[in-house]
Length: 82
Image (cartoon, rainbow, N blue to C red; front, side, top):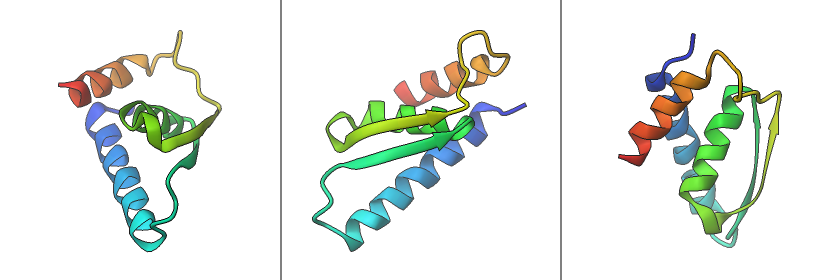
């Protein structure tokens, strides 16, 4: 089962990658995010944390309501919000 620390690690990797792309292409003001499964959770959280910087978030195979993996996501979100 995925835990909040690995979600945090993935979030940090996505953030670092986006920042490296922005350094290379400074004219890119907004981005499109695509995430699959847990990557969709990370993409949604990143978009929530950077509201003016995302055009669209596309999630594939993302099931959080009724999912057994909802608890780690809520813990992840609570940890990032604190």
